[in-house]
Image (cartoon, rainbow, N blue to C red; front, top):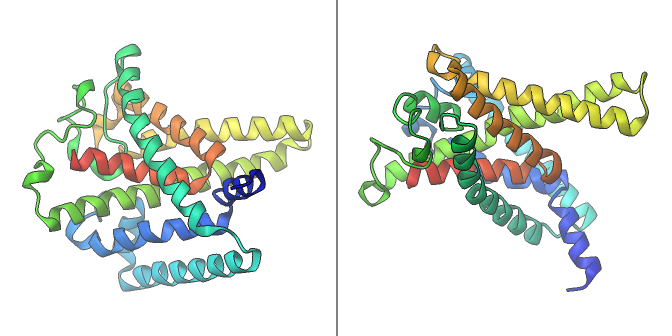
Length: 267
């Protein structure tokens, strides 16, 4: 493989079309197991879907199909190496998930903070069980070990992880970081140079998104989420995902979040 081919493959991992194509498997996995996983009470998007009924779910399917068709059209138009790009995204997401666990555990001991789940649904189910045990970041506590899980339980667990990687990264990183940074950059252009306004906009967006990510775990009356150590830990995790989104893109960030929660649930 030539240097030009390697460069083109690396650029493909950041292309929006391949990123959206990689989100489709997460969406299908989540939608296929959402009923068994009983996620309505935990995910912000799921709560909205519950209120809108069949109309909300139908809109989600239509949006999924439209995005898929747009992505496929762009891939064929630009002749993007989507297979290699998709493989790299999946592998890199898994590597980041494997790295994230030990890093966050080390941070809990150094700062110190209370290690807690990163997905909204896991937080709602597990707070008070793992919050006082930094070494239990990847320990399910009362949940069944994988060897004791049935296929339906594994499917439901993966649906939870897929929903976290999909919804929370779209909400807190794509919109909360990318969208907000774009708005701030347009404002800061009136007062600063292009490079300065962009750096300032992304820095503020990442910080605010991390704070929102941490606070969102308290939605639904989960008061433990606002305990200082727990809130700070999730803010640090939000910063990590924000930086990963900024430097490696949405798809890598989504798969890292999915793989992290999957490891958490199936370990």
